[in-house]
Length: 229
Image (cartoon, rainbow, N blue to C red; front, side, top):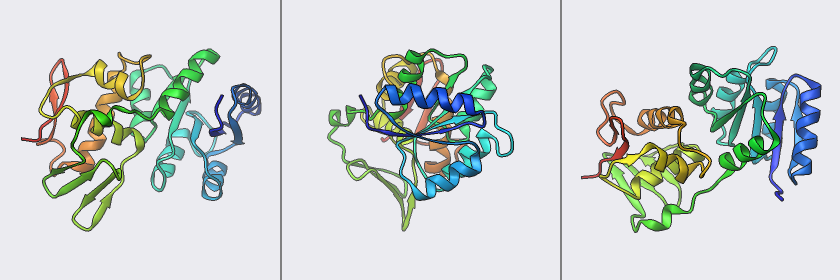
């Protein structure tokens, strides 16, 4: 059972009721919003552990809402969508979502996806490196802070987890499946679009030239490598 507080954002009352009932039965605290605008107002005044956000909403779309939330918050976001195309999934992740679940879904699948987004990995104990430097950027893993000169760089929780796992295995090609299962959990392994989006987001924040990275390198057909030497 969980005491995490979930905000359900959907413009269909019936969907909100079903999700509220389902989540409460699983031990979650639940609030809901009928629009992206309402959700943003609630986030300003209340603390949530997860946002369950519908992709297709009248008015402010799920994508627009996700982008707006990401301007000021790293609350984990799970996008709920009927769109199964990879480009739509990538669009959701690129907007700042930490994961997605496609309708129709079973309760067990939804709960697994929620657990994966809320998951905090423990693999940091595998490395003695408490800080690393990528050029003029310093990453403090204990404090979970990224600093560039006098400016702090904001990483979402999952962005940080991906970076941490790569840093725990420096200068080594790590397979896609290994990273996915370490960061999102054992139910993952084939969702390579997750890693493409998250590594690209990290490159934009950490690399001087994201299109020609020096540190966060792609290993074709294998995975990714953090180059520290």
